[in-house]
Length: 357
Image (cartoon, rainbow, N blue to C red):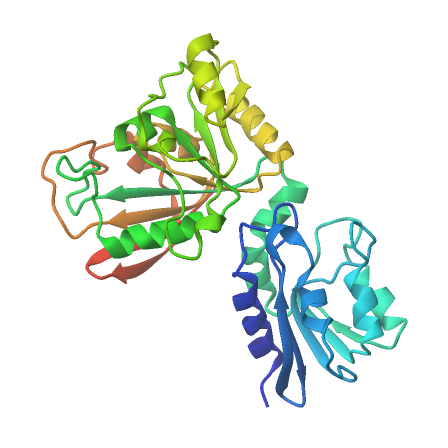
C-alpha cells in the first residue's frame, strides 16, 4: 500500500501546473484516493478559482470513505466561493491529509475543527519541509513587506554575458528552460538597458504556454526605452508597466498607445527605495517576481537580500571577450550560496542556487 507521502508528492506535482498563474491565491494540488486507487485529482485553476479540492471533488464519483491529500490546508472561509471544507463534508470524505498550513488568517488552523465536527480525520504537516519551500512565496505574501523574488542570468563557459554574433549565449534547451521558468511567476522585472541591449520580448515562447507569459515591469527612470524594439512590433496581450521619473510627453504618449501603463517613481538607489517599489508591486497583486537584468541591477538585489533563488545558465561555448565577466564582477561576492542543484541541458548547465539571506 502506498503511504501518505506518496500521494502528497503526487499532489505537489499537480500544484506546479499553474504555479505563477493563480494571482493572489496559492497554487494547490489535490489527490483523492480510496483503497490505494486514485479516484480523482485536481489543481487550482488559472487565476486562482476554482480551488484544487473543488476541482477534484466536483465530479459524479462516490467519494464516501475516501482519503483526500492536498498540498495546503483546505480553506474554511467564505470568499468569492464557498469554503473547500463544505464540499469535503458533502462528499463524505473519510480523512484529509495536508502538507502546509494556510497562511490566510481567515482559514489558518481552522479546517481541522470544522472537519472534525463531521468526524473527518485531519492530519497536517505531511512532508512539511516540502510545503514550507513550495509555499515560501505564499508565506511572504501574508507575512512579509516584500514579494518572493527569484532571478536569472546567462553566461558563456568563460563567464561573459554577450554574444556579438546572434545575441544568444546559451543553446536552445537552455532558452526553452528559461521560457518555462518565466511561466511560473506573476511578473518579470527588467530594465530599459537590458531590453534595449537584447531587443528582448521577455515572454514565454513555448507552444501551449504563451498565455502564461507573466506581466512585465520595466524600470526606466530616465525614459531611455527605445521605440523601435521587437517588443512594439506586435500587439501587447499582457499587462506591461513602465516605472519612470521623467515626464516626456511625446514618448509617454507613444508607450501608452502601445498599451503600456505608466507609473511614476522618484528614485531607485537604496533599499528604502526598492522596499517602496516592491510594496507597490505587492499591492498590485504581484507575489512571485522573476528578475531578468544585467549584472549591475542584479548586484543591488543580491546586496539588499531580495533574491531567494538565482538561476544561472552556463553555456558550453566560449565568447572570449564580449560583455561583462561574472568572474571579475563585484556581484560575485554577493552570491551567498546556501545550496545549489546542477542540471545538464544538452551541454549547457543550469545551476539553481539557493541564496543565503
